[in-house]
Image (tube, rainbow, N blue to C red):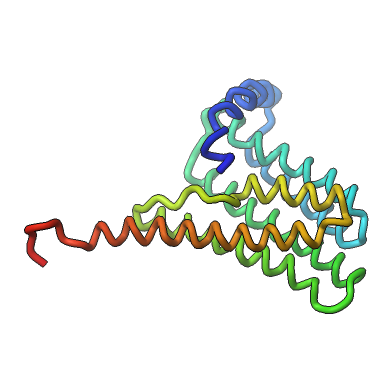
Length: 203
């Protein structure tokens, strides 16, 4: 949702920063790797129960993730390979952070509540898979109420105010599941139009 509506405005801010980093010889791949390493640290910190520090790591993870594309554009190194690496790194980062939260809940909370962030992670992976598979088939699966940017913001709120972390995770699970349904129906309609013969045509 945010990605589609705010992308142009955000790019106006990030592109000049990308040009500066390019002149400093910072590469897009280096930024992507940095984001993964910060996520590793963040997962460990969250798992040990330091949620505010985890919140800071989450924000720091977002910086290289936001800037790697701008640097690739400024340096003229945008490529399919880079896009693939960036997409894979996003999934790695998401998995690390949710695993950190599961570790924290398994240590500090009773019962099976540690499965809640695992369920959110599974729903998020389904949303990402739907887009990737749809685009490989020539369909558009972008959009939805809880895309990665929204998950990032909501998770940050949960880490910042640790008393509401579990309710926030429930909200994320419901809205991410709803997003998966939105994308499924969007692609289903496109695929249906492709196979339905036009009126007056032959079947």
